[in-house]
Amino acid sequence: MKVAVGLSGGVDSAMAAWLLKRQGHELVGITMQIWDGTVALPDIGRAGCYGPGEARDIKAASDIAARLGIQHLTVPLAEAYKQAVLAPFRAAYRAGRTPNPCVLCNQLLKFGLLLQTARAMGISFDAFATGHYARVAYDTDRDGYTLRAGTDAAKDQSYFLARLNQSQLARILFPLGNMTKPDVIALARQAGFADVAGRAESQDFIESDSYDALFQPEDSQPGQVVDTAGKLLGRHRGIIHFTVGQRHRLGVATGERMYVKELRPATHTVVLGRREEVFRDNCLIEDPNWIAGEPPPAGSDCVIRLRYRHPGVAARLQPLPQGIWQATFAEPQFAVAPGQAAVCYRGDEVLGGGWIA
Image (cartoon, rainbow, N blue to C red; front, side, top):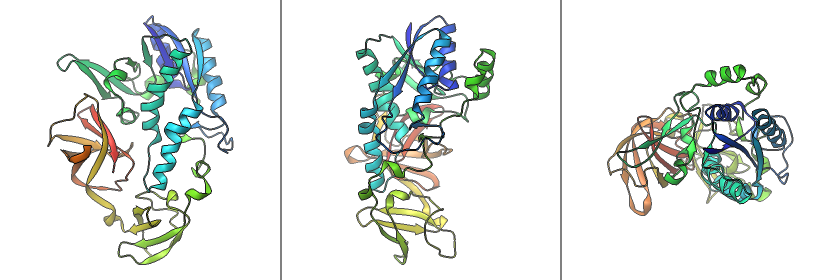
């Protein structure tokens, strides 16, 4: 096949391309360009997708393509990224939610607009490959595609892909899905890419130690910090600086360990509670994407991951009006943050995911 490979400049995408080339596919490397300098971020050398260091990543991707002997194309998506990822990110924080921009970016840009734009730029291909640690399989009984967790539990990235659909999965290849990270590093060294194996990996979607530069002054409205009984504990400079479950940088001293329990955007209020007060036994999920194309039966059991590093909790799903689903947990969970992706699994299969409401 002719395969477009998303090259980030890192070892995972490089080895995905190397493996596909060894299998005899015709390759073209494509890299998103999402940074245009309009957000004031210093070049601190911290690995992140969005920031001034992107130029180094694009150069690294181009160098990898040259070493592989394949064409490389940089696809300009800076304006689309601002509209599809940064604008919802800002809106979510203003609304007291904790967004996951990587899930949105995968759904709308990396597996969507990136491919459309590459084709519009004259690149033709049969499939799209990335270095994600996940797996796609065709299920003949269901006549459809399934998304499954990567073999390496420590690197599994299926959580970030739960918003993909059947048409996207039909043309996706994940060459690293059955490999572990140490296997990939070893392969890179054997294949002559030891320098790439030593590159720092992205730690966040933004190349900065904080998200402050993404917001405007009017986004940060001061308000009160209270406890669960409504007692005033202090004041804060804006709910955009808080997330449910947060313990540090609360700006108040109560004599005991406190956590953010709730954010109330209508009154710009931060509610703190003791750890035991920040557990929930259920959550509502809005705008779910079911990978099979249809929802699971009411009362279905699954395991839900409530954030990327969450180990998962057994839960039962029930549909509610207006496309909302309720997930009832087998045991209470700490810091269930509105805005985060709730991803449902059955075994290693991703059923789908939506946003915690």
